[in-house]
Amino acid sequence: MKKTVARLADGRQLIYYDTTDGGKSRARPADSRQLSALTVGSELRFDPLVDEWVAIAAHRQDRTHLPDAAECPLCPSRDGALTEIPASDYEVVVFDNRFPSLSADVGELASAGEELVPRQPGIGHCEIVCFTSDHDSSFAQLTPARARTVLEAWADRTIELGLQPGIEQVVPFENRGVEIGVTLQHPHGQIYALPFAAPRTRRMLESARSYRRRTWRNLFADVLATERKAGTRIVAENEFWTAFVPAAARWPVEVHVYPHRQVPDLPALSEAERDAFCHIYLDLLRRLDRLYDTPLPYVAAWQQAMVNIDRDLSYLRLELFSIRRAEDKLKYLAAMESAMGVFLNDVRPEDVAQRLRDLGD
Image (tube, rainbow, N blue to C red; front, side):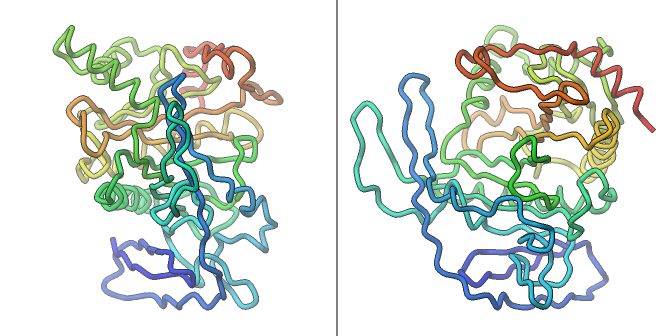
């Protein structure tokens, strides 16, 4: 993989990731746009009722929202249409989000906040990951080689962001589909570097810690072993990975992808594990797109180890879910889910797994 670092007109970092090409280099023009300096006013406020931090980022109200393809900021630049990527073509690109929820450059807070609800600057990092220059493509349509380049970018950014002061967790993810809430339809994902443990991660680590005290075993490894033994919820597997619908799935379509070896994060994967992931993940995404007549909207997020703590408890995995519960129906988080945190799933996990198995090539 070849990595080329550049700067956008307002100083944000942009990185091109390319497959090795025998030393041949592509032209990487400078960003010739006239951009004003970023003004980021993010802050974190602590909710004492649930022991969680909430990010307040009012400047994101002005971010680009579902532009026409001709005005897509993630497409390559061309005459008369300069975008976030100055080059006329690219493989995989990662750059700092112009509308970040968290940033290393936030200013001082006007008020320290009340004693019960402390506040602090929204320090962190948010990046955009473009999977392809083709606006009309998708991750499912990538070649295994291109998917591997995306995986290398995720791993590289996990290392780099984890070295930044104050960062506790790095989360690469993809939101796909307007139903999910994407504001740009070009194939892309994001990476968040958080200054705290995400609430769900923290709760799962607490469960894993309690399980280890009782059994001296790893909770995630035993979940995987249980699913592989049962077999009824397995969607696909190969030598190094298994994709399955969890027994207590919260979402109408939910699939977790585990490596067979316990590793803390993406950089820890071997070369063979990286290649094998690309094949099983592309297979899974293509099955998901065959479920209905329209491409499936989904969220896919990597659960990685914390940067500094509990790495021995952690188990790298990708968790994917969709809010589509039928051809013409979406699952909305109503009273029990939104107000009480109690999920109600209308679809049996075993039925979803069987449908996805049947949709293989």
